[in-house]
Length: 488
Image (tube, rainbow, N blue to C red; front, top):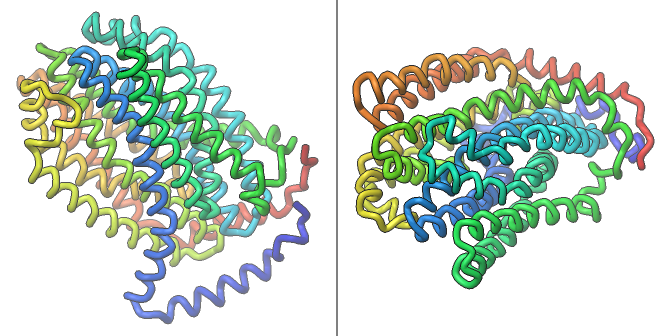
């Protein structure tokens, strides 16, 4: 892509400033309507695509649950601990693109979006190779962590079957963020729908027709997630992004160390939170009557994860909106986008809180018909409701951090709140006060998640948005001096 196709940076700044002045003169309801439209243009398709993607894991778990309690526990461990471990890390590392691509797109530096995505492919692929032993040695690791012998054995088999899924993350996550940053969210939703339909059919075929049992349920997820990869990649390579995709570039191999550092900060920030609830499942596996407790908690975590796709869509939408506004030098716009996103997400969280409170007796029926499991889930429903409510705020504030490039600071906050406060408090409530799984979960929610949300809220409220916009503009100037490299 030649540089004469991109407007001059000075002209863009003048145009954006004029638009911002007109925007400030509008009434508050009009500004909220305009910002909500921009936000939902990203969030709407993002919610659908994330729910569709996560539903593939839920469907896999549901098929396993109707095979038996052991199969449900095994697939739950494989999905929530083994896959969840690297899912959180790789998803977080890919979120570096929300900062880089979002600010580049806001600054009209279109060429760099494709280069950044290619750098992310390289970094995440190397990371996948390094994380491969987690899948290969899942059984002995789970036994060391105190999981029941039969659950650990079957979980290890399921994890081995999910290795192709593991490598799909390295390509699918960067593709999603690349397209989201330039507001091409519709294609993500349509490809996700196609993959979900395929997953339902393949799951039925493998489990009920081929009778492959838990191995069949584990294998199905690979086909569906690689459908996502090839669908999004085909759209990108074959004309869907003519402005931002100029072909494979040698420039993707330059600046990898700086890119890796930002990706690592993003990965640590998000995976510390993602792993937090995985640790909750592992701690529960060490309780008496662990199989029933594990099944009940896994169902609650699956429901929480399902609903969590909505706040995560706001995480993505907020990150893109904040990054776009900061890249355009509009600090006030970034602040207003934050306020609208947080309020909207809280309203949705309250709706689901009420829903869980009303239907607490029925929420587990999709996963199990075991009376013991259903009763255990019913007892945990109150904690599930409050977890969902808290999670309607925290991911949005994390999205602000991603859009602003604060990942390294938030990583330290997550480490302190979750692992120095939340986990010890959960351990104390669960074993010290003999409250079992309810004590562990309550301690981790109110000792870790609530404190972390409060700190992020204070940081966001005290943020100097004009200063953040100046930092983003400095990055724009650095990009503008970058020489174009040969395109392969």
